[in-house]
Amino acid sequence: MKKTPPNEIFQVIDETLLSHDNKLSISLLCNIAGVSRAGYYHWKNNEEIRYYKEIKDQEDFNIILN
Amino acid sequence: MALKLFTDTEVEILKNNQYTYNVTNKSIKFTAEFKQLFYNKIQERLHTPKIIEELGYDINILGIKRSYGIALHIKEEYRVNGEFHEGRMTSTIEQRLAKNEISPSKALIQMNTRVTYLEQQIEYLKKILQVDS
Image 1 (cartoon, each protein chain N blue to C red):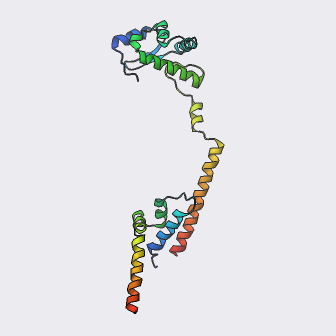
Image 2: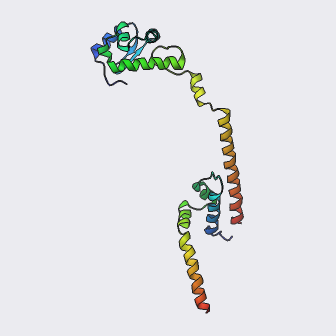
Image 3: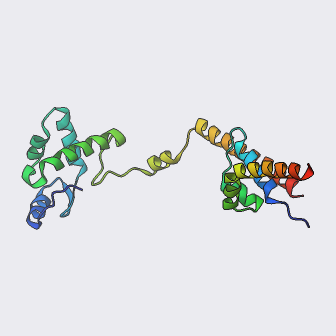
């Protein structure tokens, strides 16, 4: 069976946490999903870096194409 | 506990008073009769040290601060129980149970919160299962 990329799980956790009147804790959400809390925070803190990396990749891709 | 400790001779002197329920080097407990008399005299607006002297205690042995503490405790016991008990003030079983009871409105809020919590948990589980499959 193919393992779900943790990225998507973290995405779901983030959505749940940001939803209105959320009463669930981060540790509970991570526990249910079977991912570590540290992993979630790591993913959360690297959001910006991931975004810039994506842009840079796109630029490099364009350079190669031209 | 008061800061002033009783010496062994002082303990003997205090023991001889008819209103003393129990006395150790660190604490003194009074009979219900003493408390009732004390409370009556408070109502007559007598000064606390004077009441203590009238009831046969030496204010120098008890200490000024402790006497005012005694007055406070007696007033508190009357406020809570409406009557006096021998020795230490202890709450009855009914009072202890009443402390743990919560009002219906509070219970409703608690239940509502619990329902929301469970709903959110189910919602989250659905989402996770969708992603996982």
